Image 1: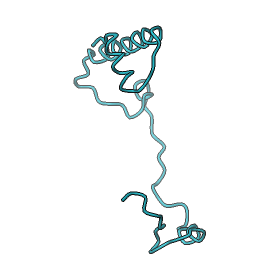
Image 2 (image 1 turned 45 degrees about the vertical axis):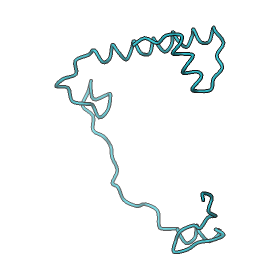
Image 3 (image 1 turned 90 degrees about the vertical axis):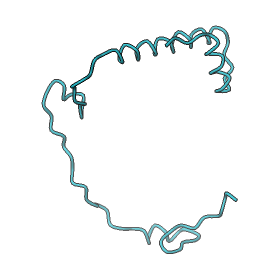
Length: 99
């Protein structure tokens, strides 16, 4: 997929950007380079390959050091809400901003 100078102009307009002609040419080159990389990546046959949990797993076996999912801090809700201007049933009350 290759972009044209008109595509860059349209994208810049939609993004509300004002690009000088040199900037527009540079953006065209950079974006087309990005799309070239994406096309090369899409061309690689990945059928039968399992995704890696970690990039290092491709070269060595790793064991992820995961900690137990337990609460380590005591519940401080009441103490944290003491300075709030308005609280109801454990929730902060704020002014309505959308009508």
